[in-house]
Image (cartoon, rainbow, N blue to C red; front, side, top):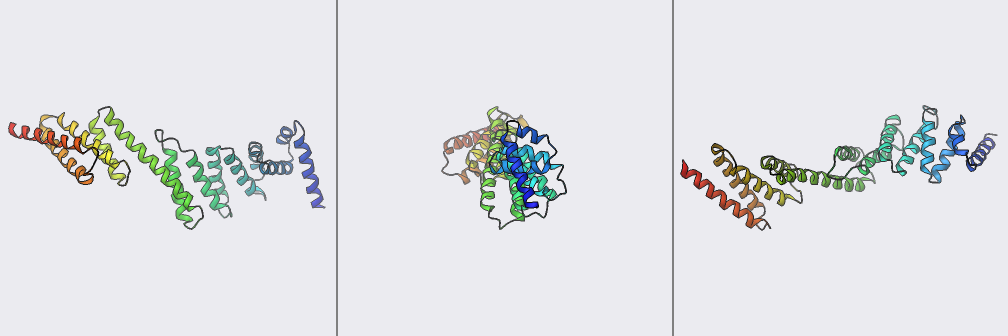
Length: 269
């Protein structure tokens, strides 16, 4: 009898959806079983926008009931397929809180992080979302170290870390470009300390050296000698790290000019 009722319900849903205004009538109806069947049908047909609306409509009614987990999951997945990554990420995180013992918990944690990754903006924009995605992926890898998703997680982490490196490098270079040499020097110094394996390390050390020199020669008289000595130290580090650098001729010229300025300051004493 129950099977016959279910079959009749599915047929009714199909007929309703086939009509011109069937979807809107269903969305506004109180037949929640029909809504659930229709939402699943739309999802399986990859009509995710309509599925998402129905699943959202069903969320409150089915809270604590048998189909609550399925509705939460498919609602989040519908949003994901619609590329609404911000809302989908929120729903995956909500799913993980509501159903901590679900068999889908690992997938929910992955998609929560992955949605933030997909929403991560270009390097020249605010990177708060990128940092949140990195944090969530790292937590995922710690909790499920043997997950089949770990290679994908690592690829996403590498890509986002490169984005943060580029962001911080461009901030430091931005100070250099506008001739704020002290700020540029400190920013490049922090960059080199934070990212010892960065691919643009040579460039960063060179521009830090130039910034150090230009800051020093424009210093107050009582501070100049000390700061010129710092330029010498910075050159030694650069030369030691990149003895075949494309910037070596320019760096050696800075060193020569620095030594000459130091000698002049010494003679003035």
